[in-house]
Length: 328
Image (cartoon, rainbow, N blue to C red; front, top):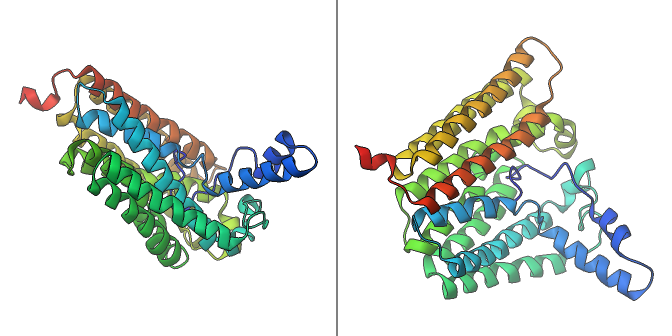
């Protein structure tokens, strides 16, 4: 998943599928074939899947601290990618009606009818079944079950249940984006340990401030589509205060993981956390002063924050030095 593209996020940047079509295709049958392939790729929201890489690899390295099993990591990433692609495709199917109403999503494949909805549904289901079978074969049954649970939760609980009914949609719906941490840990250990739950919590608490910052910038899009994102139904002061609260919870949860890690991760989490908190507080302060704020800056920088924290975790895990917990 692209960092930051949790439930509610729609990818505000990057080339549209149409632009890609025009750049890489010519006239005739080959161009139509390429456009169709690109449309199916776009259904999976490939930039959204960046989060899979950011969360899964460091989690697996922590679970097998001091060792690197490249074969298992690659196999888990492939299975996880298919699962995320399935969830994203089925999300496009469920949201095809509102995607047509939002400027940022109007060029998605189903919104512009580049792919038949029935074909997209079959494509999503096949990807989901393939992810389950692959992870069961290459890792273990628990990993496969967790991926299926993620797909079902994202489609039925978030997309069909919460998204159009409550302003807290991304708070609870964001749990789907946290699952790569559990999948990665289970692939290595066959179970779910407390460090995996802590990493789940990091992404869980990070999702609301990240997504609400984007929604503040595009709240008119959500209003037009009838999606009650928090910035649509609450004042900017209320939204930015919630952003500050969830940012604190994010940073504190990263530090809760310290006993299972070493000094490298702990130092990175402290410095990156202070930086993230500073940005959140600056946004809140600007709104309180009545200034014209740029919430999209926090959205973009929150991507960098999560990437830095998880990269620090990966390096710390590969080094395999003494954990903070071993000193107590």
